[in-house]
Amino acid sequence: MARRPRLHEFRLIEQLRRSFGRTGPAVVRGIGDDAAVVAPPKGRQLVLTTDLLIEGVHFDLRTASVEDVGYKAAIANLSDIAAMGARPEQALVSVALPPSCTVPHVLRLYKGIMNACRPHRVALIGGDTSASPRGLFLSLTVTGSIPAGTALRRDGARVGDLLYVTGTLGDSLAGLRLLSRRGQGAGPLKASERRFLIDRHRRPIAQVRLGQTLSALRLASAAIDLSDGLSGDLRHLCEQSRVGAEIDEAALPFSPALRAYARSSQADPVAFALQGGEDYELLFTVHPAKQRMLQRTARRAGRRVTRIGVIRPKAFGLLIRETTGLLRRLPATSYVHFHHAPSE
Ligand code: ADP
Ligand code: MG
Image (cartoon, rainbow, N blue to C red; front, side):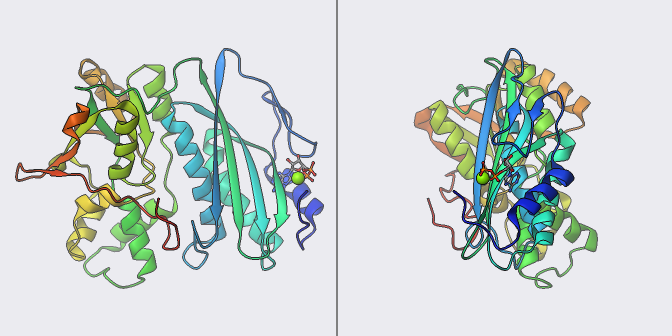
């Protein structure tokens, strides 16, 4: 039983249904019934993910708009589906609304969510609405599907496999720093570089298409999405696969804007890649024999993929080769989404 929020719950749900709900061949019954009914995709397995976001823990409405919060919550889920190599399909959204929250706020929150979902044709099929005595709570569930047995798992990496990442690393954290220290440290940064980094933080993109290509062509032996920084996410992949890894510092892909930011703020771009969260790029492993096919596929998809290292035996540990040739341990710290977040 939901605690009735101050704003008119049923009218709000009706408005959400009209603005964002959708039925179709896959969605037999959407928002408005006791539960949604969807047609099971033939010969495919279901892939399910959910995320709970709490104001003051995972986001701060002083530095992010409600639309940003909705957008990024959806991307976090879509990126999980992408990292499994699956096709996203439906979304369920539950909210607990504080007294200060108005109908236009809720509609903006959903606008953000659906802006992230629409390019992937993900349909909003339901949710739940409650009042919150303090702070906004948002829970998103995204469903997806994949041909049976083809999901990209974290436990498939083998010694000798090559480590790849999509896109560039560390941009989102630099964008967050720019947002939270308005004006400061922006020094010699061009307006376009500043915009690029902030955009990478506020409007990241989930690698949904590439994830599906990697699984469909069986190009990747293991995959994970980069939500907590390379260091932490590589550790998850290696633990599950029972292997070690060697990263080549010189190979890490950085955007020109991140390099400029690092120069202007005397920061190390490598630290941004290792500890910066919310890049939502994919980290995956590839058997050496499949390297050329991967390069060709990425080129055709117009996506940048970079070889950043190699899988080693477990006893090797997780090491990074500096540009000087020296090997050092990968730092254990990972991204803390917000300063009140408990460290894991
Ligand atoms: P119940 O009491 O059975 O949970 P609700 O009144 O909560 O029924 O929900 C009625 C319909 O509205 C359901 O289809 C539900 O999925 C949908 N719904 C409720 N809240 C939301 C929301 N915040 N976002 C999207 N759909 C919602
Ligand atoms: Mg309900």
